[in-house]
Image 1 (cartoon, rainbow, N blue to C red):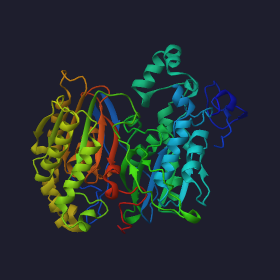
Image 2: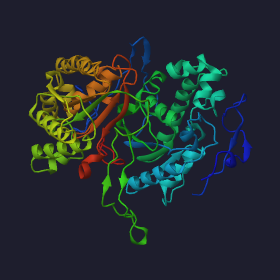
Image 3: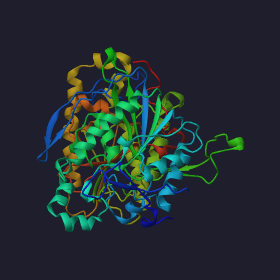
Image 4: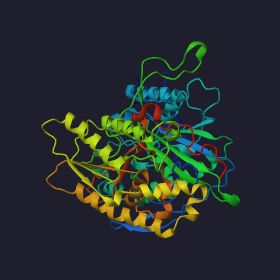
Length: 527
């Protein structure tokens, strides 16, 4: 492995570094080595537009803004991947847009695992940051595909000016209040005449214009932690105050769906998944004879709860989505002879995924499917923590949305226009009761570490995501959850403060029923 110092070889003027002049940097060579209309997969596949709001939470303003993207004519899925672990990640050094670091051995391994995971996925193009750690990750993942990787300087990491190159403890000692401001109020953080996070958000909007203009339906983007957050935030119409709220781990995968709107308006946007960790693929190569791709025999899911991205939290909420009446994973309920039996199989897989999680309580919807799923999870949990588990089982009527989901399916493509607005409002109001109830479960001081698991239909959990992010019911179309999926929300500052979304719609544990990464949930439907 190349050391950081030995890799500094030439001077250029492309990106800011830890230097008073942000136009100077050193470039290292690359080593060769729920409750509302949602863009869920209903049988109709219909979505509705998002609106924008400004709201206040915990004393700081969270802003949402309508995107101004140009109209598109075909559905597109954009898959975002953060680079693998870099030398400066390992050292705890502030990287920003500097280009000193390279991938560590672990980072190379993460990139290789991601390559295997995505080998069978179809992409029309790959965009990448030109910085070594990201470009190298893109090269590994892209593999032998014929199309050239497009590097875009706007995809570089956040510009942190005088902070770049410092170890974190050096940032604290040298910059004091400024470093504290960066940690506690990043969107208003100011240094060397710049607002780095605001600049990043502006740059991300520029990136989207180029990415969406590309003539293709499936796009891979390999970049960095902060810029990927900004890409997700700007696509969803969320302001820079959401920085650090949507976690991006090394080689974590996020997917966004863009679908055409009517009359040349900006596209509808849906976050299909957030920060899925790379799978551990079997030793057998995913390339067969004559270099033809073949599917790997085994994929072992890496638990999203074991990922180290984001700040450490002792309070965690795990949302388990179960129910055939609300979300269809690539039509699996239509193809399975008995949907109820499939729910049981999905529940067992979720329980096995969470077997290493020491839960304090499971709160489920009173619906039969969710109640049974909660019981399966509880049984596996008690077997894993025999004699030490103090697991509490509860139910909440406010987590139930099965009846609404069934109505939406019966109404088909006109379901949102036909559904009584009072019912939609009731669903949103239910989440307004369920969310503080779940937070109260997390608040028990007697529990040093507290993990609350909520088991409910996908609609209910999307509504909870909306509450967590302080959105409105009209904005819930921004999220997608599949039945059998797991969503994780951490509370590093406690349940009374802003939750941090660690991952959404994780389905890798479902095996053959896992939602594919590159295939759009839109099914190429003309909207």
